[in-house]
Amino acid sequence: MNFTFNVADVINFFFIAAGIGICSISFLHVGSGMHIREEVKKYFQLFFTLINIYISMHLIRMLMQGQAGTVFTVGIRIVTFVEFLVSGFMIFLLTLLILYIASPGKIAKTVYHTMLILLVLHVAGLIVAQFTDFYYYFDESNVYHRAKGYSISNIMHILMMAQGMFMLIRYRNKFDRRVASSLWIYLLGPLVAIGLQLLFSQVQFIILATVISAVYLYYVIIKIQTEKYNNQQKEKERLDVELSMATRIQADTLPNIFPAFPERDDFTIYASMNPAKEVGGDFYDFFLLDDTHLGIVMADVSGKGIPAALFMMVSKILIQNIAMMGNSPAEVLKFVNTQLCTNNPEEMFVTVWYGCLDLETGVLEAANAGHEFPVFKPADGSFELVKDKHGIVLGAMEGSRYKQYEIRMTPGAKLFIYTDGVPEATNADGELFGTERMLQALREAEGENPRKILEHVDASIKVFVKSAPQFDDVTMLCIEYKGALTEE
Image (cartoon, rainbow, N blue to C red):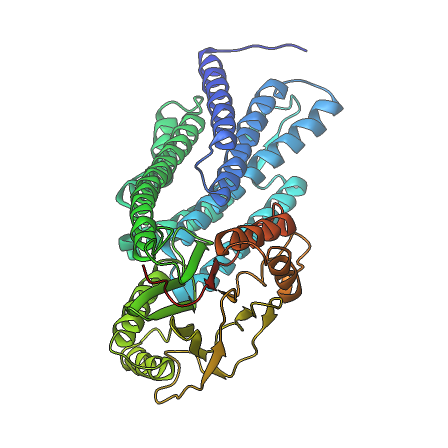
């Protein structure tokens, strides 16, 4: 094997080595880019792979050129075929990127199919040229020469580039200014390189132009991706701060200081809420209507997150305000439902159990708007479900009415109310905690005070679900009636 190199060959080797090195580094950078979208990674990995193949084939052709022998004859033809083939796929991939960004609507499929047809014709032309020497040929010394049909081999490239330019102009408003500039450089760079090659025919400026424009395009797109990621992180941090504030605000709106009424010995009450998200849609409430009546609320708003929390705040204020006017539980639910239905464009709703306990007689009047059954424990019995009459949820249908019922509590009696996050707590196998397990947990701690009872139920739920994620808010309240207030 004899190698003879002139100045142009040395320059070409330098361009090729630099191109392979730059593309290889860029390929590795794409793979390590943590903040790059997956489709962008795949695109540029394929893009730089094609460029490296194109440059490598050109290098191999240079080394094989002028070497005699059948092996070199066959080898140089295969290498040249692959080089021309890959060049077509490179321009196809670039035009595909322009099409993706332009998103031209109805004509997108037509443009794409036109590109595919041009690519197929390009491949077919190369196959034919292999047997006809129409595009290029090799002499007896295996030296490459352009044939009379060489210009036709570039028609596909020119048409695709023209199509890309058309989309860049026609849909320029859809392109980021920096991306548009880098695409223009990629499209026009090779043309400038071809012009230089007319002056210096043996120097492959096209290789240098292809590598520089490809890397610049990658740099611009990755820079934009990184900027978007950083902006998203800043926005996320801002939202995290706001959610943290919303969580504190929501927690402060619920009674959360226990014992709640340390000066009273006629009842003991305790409640807890563990939201599935930073802010939840569940809420509980209890408040003295006067010296002898206690209002108790347990509710669950449809949905989760900020919208549910806002709807929860409105519902909570309405319930307490209307209850403080002396209305019965059924009337409270009716009035609140009317208010929520009046202006509810998002069609949200809330399930509510509301009860009013007469602290002198132990009579609890209650009404249920689509909420879970309460659980009652008589002074001399165990916890059992109270299968009360459910009315329709609040906010769903204007004019709804609600049934009222009584539970008579004697000293030592306890009432447990909750949201569906308790029985519907789910483990990793998709199994629900269920009502029976809830009742079992309540009965295991029925001799304890309300706080201990809720802590035991919460612990039982955690043992059941283990490491499975929490999908719903878990809210509970327990009250123990101890009898009329002791006179001092």
